[in-house]
Image (cartoon, rainbow, N blue to C red; front, side, top):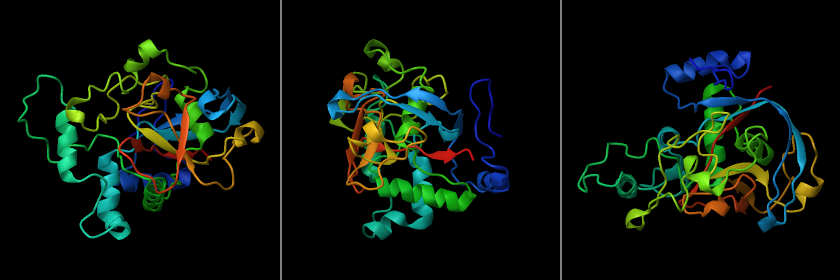
Length: 288
């Protein structure tokens, strides 16, 4: 059963009619991410001078958001059941990042002094954030999980992501000298062998909502189209982003970024089919 504490509630039943579906999913091994309930409220987003985006006050409804980024263990289950990657690409490409590279990533992220010939486990990146996942892939995972559970999983809006990252606006910034306590980023990643340095989820401290890796490790896709002018004129209540656009937003910074790139206000954007070694996602669910 999902845990509960005085500040954070984990999802067992999103809405009453979905409760049976959630229990069935867990009993049948469907990889439902652990979710954290976020009370809605008013908060002011931080501005991003690199994108000419100023701060703005928003009012958000309650929602749920993934405690961690979606892991390879969860995303691989989707790929294995649906054949999604083979259908999109070609025979033999069954999931993001081939087995040899996964073993290399695992070895490169072991602590200093580890035996150089240590053999990785059978599924070495099961608890690492899924990478090489484009916006379309992330949405396909959400749709599959929704169909399996009867719960409306989706990507968070940019406003929801910022609200959750800052713990409902109560932690708007992390000082650079303390960033290493909560984030994997360039100065803390210990890039051995020049390999990709994603790290297992939840290996750093959580914010006060109990959310891990909101900053660093991997950038996270959001639902919104990107438009630099939207933020000055967007609705105050539950903004969902522009109706159209050319690129989708991602937030939070990644393992290769400096401290400045891992701020709650930092944002970037890319085309929906872009994949890279520091780009993943987490899921959200409306609390209605």
